[in-house]
Length: 250
Image 1: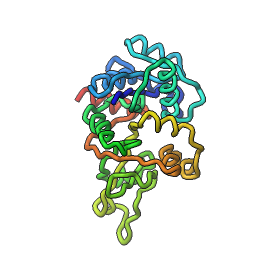
Image 2: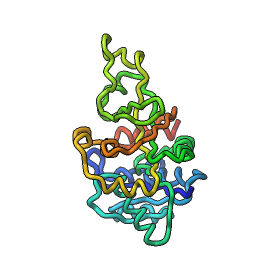
Image 3: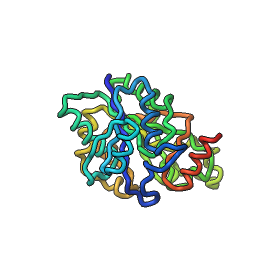
């Protein structure tokens, strides 16, 4: 199946404006993402999706492909949807759309390859990644989205709150009593499913948790969760950027 990787990249960010253009080892963060995804054999085409001319100029400067999108998108998924429709109007058709955020400089080839392999099962509509949580600090942080699945690794719910609740012991013991998973926000969708996702109405659970994937669950879509042992470093704050710079030096 033919796959396009789309890298949504926004300049506006409450915690770290302009983070896709932040310098990391002499390159903007978005360039690290682009080059990392481009090295994956299963990906046929890569492009950055942005509504900011500064990001578009940076992408063009390092020789990357960029598509300008509308400014009113509320999520990376919506931005990906616009790009796919633009590509379709130009005669470019793709079976699978990979959504990798523009603030994830250390894209892991093994992660993406495993994620895309989920579509070998023709029942897969949407796939995403998760990693085991091993500390109480990681479990209780609302910045870490938790996911619970059924026996077939299908998502039941995503939450910023630790789920499930473990009775009869303190929260410090929970990671020893239950196998918790942290959601890693890289998605892959069937192209025709993506088209439907961006047309869905918002839902109460999504509004409450501020998690777009809950909209999909509430509307009855199935999300396959693939477990990975690889940790990602997303650049959401200046502290994250410093951590990424230290990782480069290691």
